[in-house]
Length: 265
Image (cartoon, rainbow, N blue to C red; front, side, top):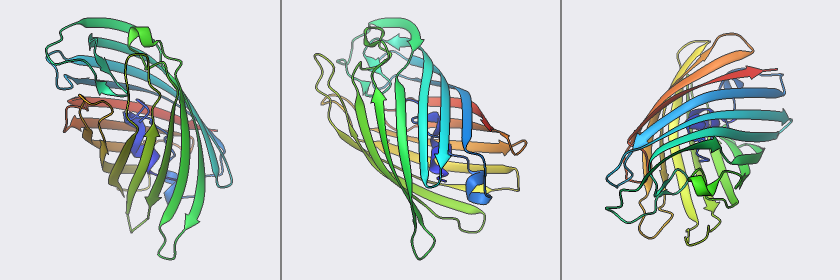
């Protein structure tokens, strides 16, 4: 099972990572996991000006379910969102207003629903595993509050990863088909991520990941950020992940942090 989804937990922006996030257990690479169903809840908080003059703070509480049967993994994610700051910032697409605009807002409510299907394609001769994933974001979040675009999006991605001693290097390449909300022409974009986890011992792992994405609007900015994360297994059924994010481009938040707890049934 792909450790990349664990690293991309913060991408519950459906893509903070996360959409993201998502969240296959890293211990599945380290040891067999006979359970089929996992449930996760977390908290994610980011802040940044996205190239504008006003900081925007976004708080998310994601709820995730995953079910695996054989090489197939099904996922369902939603979240509660709170957004305070620039009215022309959307978490999925970055800043879409003209520079100098200082309109602010404070809104909260349910976010979008994301459904995903992953098929584990198998391993190459050198032990590299390959997964193919399709995701659909249902535009259920209230676009009038700026909690989403109000449109459905489609994402297709390929993930590769390999276990090398205590390390699991990984990478992903994907493409987003973005729906166009009224008055805004969004571009379909490529995105990518590379990184690695490192096993400290039987219950602890750490990792680092870079994520990048093309700009979604003509006057927008690309996304680029680095996430460091720590994973702790408390029991075979319970684990937690903690992470911090540093933005490297105007399309990403400047900083972010979060945590998630997962229970395996």
